[in-house]
Image 1 (tube, each protein chain N blue to C red):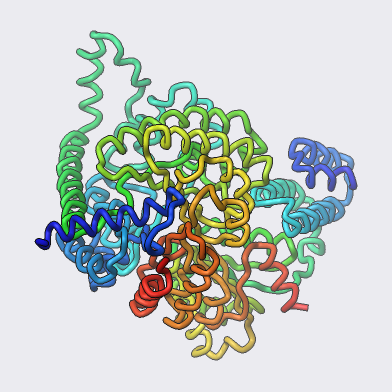
Image 2 (image 1 turned 180 degrees about the vertical axis):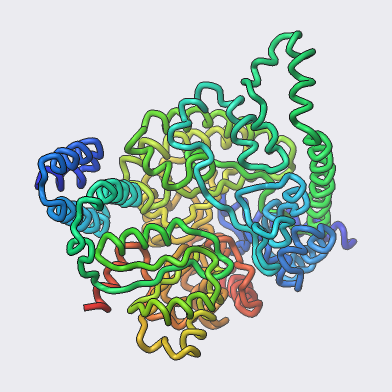
Length: 208
Length: 422
């Protein structure tokens, strides 16, 4: 397994695919293979935090994991499949904003780190966030927005969650190009995260 | 002194105030120059849809704002594109207020947004490189424009038209396939000329009022041209690992074209400053080795080519360029007017002092949601950091966000005027 983890962390996609295929052919426990990918992703996250890895490495390792998961999923037993998630998170780019790149990377990293993520997509109306909060019952809502125009829709979303009586039970984080702590306070969120790894750390901190 | 000669004098003073700072010379006051766009319309109650569709209304609002703000340089007009031209062309890949297609229509109060995607798919790069013009005409143009969509039906490469016989047989066949593309293009062209004339007139009117325009030409570095538009973020980031040679081939292909296009546009304008929004080279998007290999060499050559032709590059360093300052310090002193978004100012001072001025960086978050007092404190600290000169003040990301509170914008301006005197 160490060889596979090393290959993923070294961004050697070809080797990682070959090793994975080989392990599947050798009937290695599929959960163990997936665990190796998770360990590798944790190391990728660590290196991102240390400023050694950047967006290309997050995207490529995510691609490697997705490709491996596609192969491994059919081999998992029902018990494996329903492996316990750490918690539930709703993600969406707020109303009027159609940017998805940052949101997608956050969704990917949360998913990899064991969270059940409901991605509402882009240009998400306030009412959809509220409805999803009631139905999905998340511990965290992450609102994404690239532009300054996202400030007010974020603020309105938080206000609507308060109005609906669900704000108290949910932590809210924001992220995106023009977000900062000033906007966290302005919209009434609990935290601002500057990147996907910070989003994961916030959730880890909140959901113990 | 007559009003017009007074205005002419002000124009020259303002232009000099900014360009002296760019040239690292002492100026009488910290200059105010902005890259804002829609704020000039919306602060007068003209919404984004009206700004894109009613050129006269937009121009009137812009002039009122220019007078109200009384900056040394007013914002970038060309950002306010023509919604009418975009409709006629059936432009895909944008959403904007007032779009004829409801699927692409944003509410009137929002500015247009660009959908970044991989126009050239990962497995199409070879085809593109083999014949870029044909791929552009038959694949990319139909992907960007509904109106030009029928070009995708042309069954053979465009170079099949390279002999007289195909001019007789092939061109009429193509014309039949293409239907009314010609009339739509004519209509778009006519509308574009109307829009262009309104922009040119506005720049001339502003000049008459004594206000220089910050720039009227935009360029892009080769990597961003490829990554922002042709391969998208995901595509280009994966290419760095999966097909680095092909990514470099795309960058190499476009590098000379970037220079050629920019020089051609600059030739047509009296304003010799070129806006260059930079994206994928920011900290976080790639590591130092990747920046050094894929991004910096062609960007540096682009800057130098423009400088050689007497132009002032105005790079907009969107995101955090702190990790790239050592590279930017390789540029010739006093020639670059760089606009910053998020940057470690102390590091900038340390590394760029004597090389390039600092232009920025009052956060949009503060202008939208802060108070005049907070803005004042921020601007004072900014001026203190650059007490010995080399500063031009503006909002950080896109200048003044259109959602800015007027009192915050005025606090920014008043603080510079009071506190920024030499």
